[in-house]
Amino acid sequence: MQLEIITPEKKVFEGEVTSVQLPGVTGKFEILNNHAPIISSLTKGKVRVIDSNNNTEHYDINGGVIEMQNNKVIVLAD
Image 1: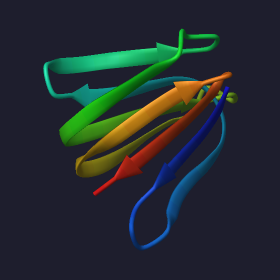
Image 2 (image 1 turned 90 degrees about the horizontal axis):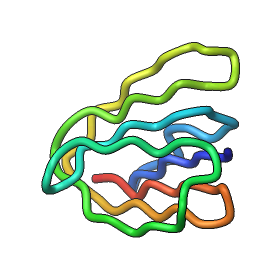
Image 3 (image 1 turned 180 degrees about the vertical axis):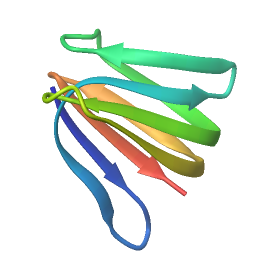
Image 4 (image 1 turned 30 degrees about the vertical axis):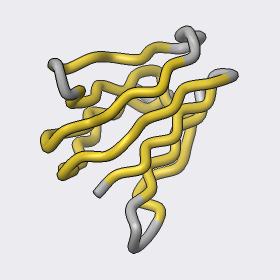
């Protein structure tokens, strides 16, 4: 699936991933390939990204919003 992590300053990440774990307001949740469409609020925490080569990266955010639709994830982060 395609992932974009965007902050007000720049696009932090763009690429093909197999998994993304996010800090939701009610707890962590994970999105995998072909996940159902979702829109959710995010809180302060770490976003864990596993790319198509099985490399793991972490990004700190202070909150934001996520949208998953048509196998594309967009994270608008603070």
